[in-house]
Amino acid sequence: MTPLPANSALDSFFLEARAKLLDLAAILDRIGRGGGAGAVAEDPRLARIREALDILADESGGRAERVQKLFSLDYEPGWKIPQPRY
Image (cartoon, rainbow, N blue to C red; front, side, top):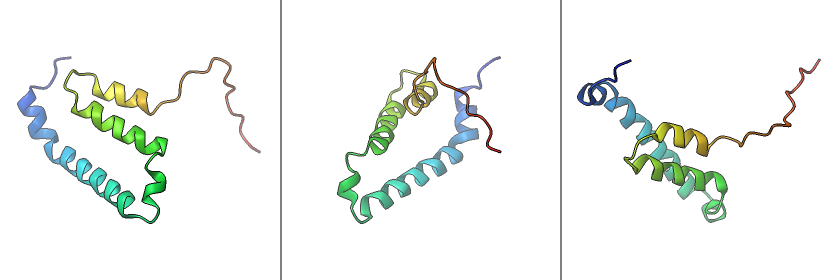
């Protein structure tokens, strides 16, 4: 499969990327101005979001994979498949 030319990719996805970045900025603003914002400053979830932003700023490639791995659990060979509840 041939990758989309960079200018076509930018034309196609710019508005979608812009919207998602604005959503993320609004979420971070809500967290920052919420009551007890200082208490979540060290929350590992917020730390992962910040780490993901660093990955996005890194132009070395593989960003989607690295962000996915950041938010994924490590493989556990002994993990049992959940059984349906009846």
